[in-house]
Length: 217
Image (cartoon, one colour):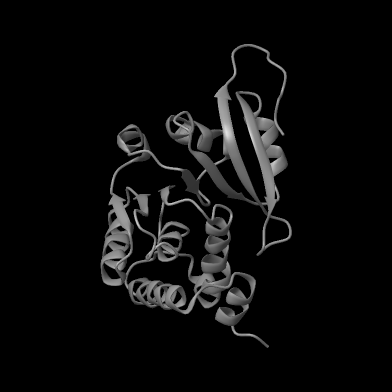
């Protein structure tokens, strides 16, 4: 039987150098978790499958992107993991937006220890979103319903960014609800870690005016 780490890397293989960075993230998370509750304790025994592989598949959904923003970064999933895949990419940068003090401190320490191309913004999303530099991809994991995510990320989407939102089995309902207020151009990508989950790639989202027809793809 494969270990948690081996199973995760079988699903989302990475280079030896990236694996070393990812192990560093897990090791530091384990140290911090003993003092600060950064992730659900029940997920720590399966951190590679539940968090690392789940984050790596988001990075794999935009393999050429260098500039990312991750909203509600929490313990660094997917933001720190994405940054670990970009260490040797010239000009790469991942902006982690996390207002919780202990979590933003963890993000800063981990990125410093591992030399990750990260900028941590210890602020609320609405306070920083209009001051972020241009990014290619914006993501958020387990943060909010789709309609709220579109509101949060709209300033970046309007500037040409694409959103990658990992979503669970309620995605269809979230799309239906969001379509009441948004015209959405999006595609659903299969999840490598959960057959019931999807990654929603939002290429365009515009606020509806009146009773326009639903253009959701």
